Image 1: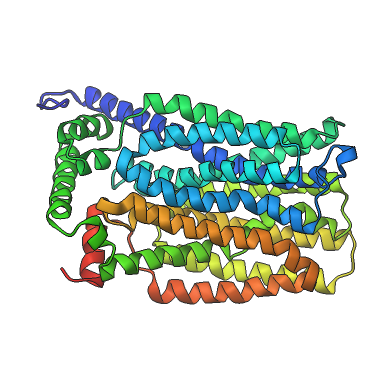
Image 2: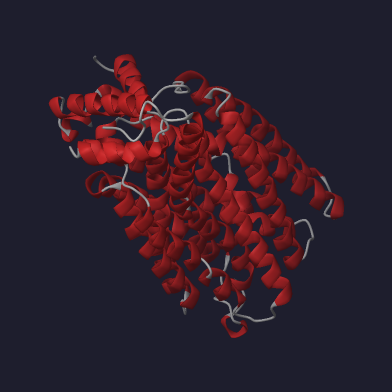
Length: 476
């Protein structure tokens, strides 16, 4: 039986295709509430930190350079744990149930940071919030990739990155408006409390989306998977082909080695190392040094606190535009080409920023040139590197342990993120603007890694990618 009778009129077929697009749009919108929360939580800290650094008598927490890095990085260490654990949880209980549980953590963590009375409690609650952020970062791309199908996977998974930067832009706008409009010493608490909103929307939304058909097949629930696919694909041919591919892959996985044995196979280890290497590539561009600390960088050029916070709106606007261009590009160009192009410009932008801050006197020209270098960096970073990273995390790994391997690789990415977030303010205080030249050297190493070691996955189904990796790096 099929939902698409052979005598269906063309107009009906068009309507059916439109309804399929609408269903997938709703699923992606719900799932990316996790990405929106991720973006807001990572972006709002740049606006909140200057106010949190005030003395307790003035409504702040009295942060210094050490505790500033600790507060910023505690969320990221939590994210490393969350992404690692959620990979195994999502393989066991499903992507949808995992997202529902993470939504509750988003709300609890956001509320906890908003009312935190001390640095210690703030670090603890930011860590808990980070578990939710990290869990969402590894689960959302996999869920979207499994829902989307081969022809839509690239553009739809890239919307995860779009919602991350929309969340960051929202955070920058809110922190700027609040910094000018409110004259309350506890303003940073209001900024952090708003992070509950996307968590609440994610929790509600998970009751209106289907389970992943790939996960259902891996659990042997074939009729349920078929029912979901019929609602998410435009033609019976797509349903039959994808269902056949998934069942074939599930049969191979069932007859093949156990999860424990599979984790020891050479091609799987190679893929995991490649995934971890991509996490290094993403984070050691230095992107989150700018996302978290742009106001602090600009204040060194002479800009005031409110003006420095307002300048971060430029970061958010450029990031959103860049990701929109990236969504268009990722379906047309190879993953490798996009990464290498992005890294080339990132290297040049870091050199320009380092020279601007090192050689020019502290004045308005230096402020503008520094901001321009940051914006060029962010445009190519968010257009060419970030979308491709999250897309690769959704498609590199085999079905049987996709959640676990994606979670582990994304967890390593969060560890790299935490290292950058914690070390950047300390390194900046120790060696100054030479810090940006360190990023240059690291990015040159990343370019070499991508050029020599990254496989190309464009134009292949998840099952074809798995077979390619198995034959290329292991025994068939």
